[in-house]
Length: 274
Image 1 (tube, helix red, strand yellow):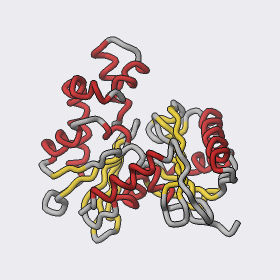
Image 2 (cartoon, one colour):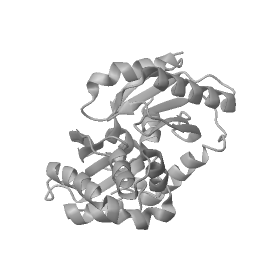
Image 3 (cartoon, rainbow, N blue to C red):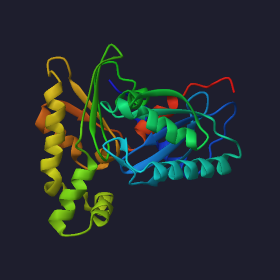
Image 4 (cartoon, one colour):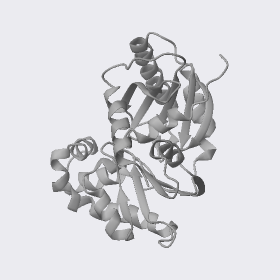
């Protein structure tokens, strides 16, 4: 069972590191999350404690695949430069993560990181990265980003199954744009406005139910008693209630599920000898 208080306290510090640099010593670990809606760089110390974080909205990936290579390289380089200026040191070692099923794109993700001067020392899947923060032994971690719904089933602390399908936050925004007759950008802004979550939940419910149905398809209720959500899309207030109703399985998410995966990626950065 996840220690929700521990996770919330940890993620609160990760979020705070967007605005301040935490005291640190020793070498630094960097996690690069190339997302469909955001690109995030999280920096941790050798003990996996938050140091600094930068993020930027981006439209350079589709379903976990880089479609604007030069744009992705530019954003990662800018984020890295901002962090290095804040930290007054060079960032070298870096881990990256992929949505399950997009392993063929690993090399492109690696090239994007290397273009900014980062050395990729580890590559993993996104739900497994998230579980580095959650530290569950048994259950399923569901990572819903802008483009995909990915899940990893854990048994005795080990991944026994990984799945991923192309339904995510982008689809919610498309539904909102059509319903309100507004642009995609305006729909994205509404989705990120917590004061409007109660209003938009009934509109996007069918898409969320589809996501939950995807997860339900892959899990055995006799083996899994808890679903743990993370990813930017799961910030939507009430999404866990819909998941619980569709799957019939208890569903939990932390106070800030958005930065869980990037922080988990950074935890898995292997420090090189440089």
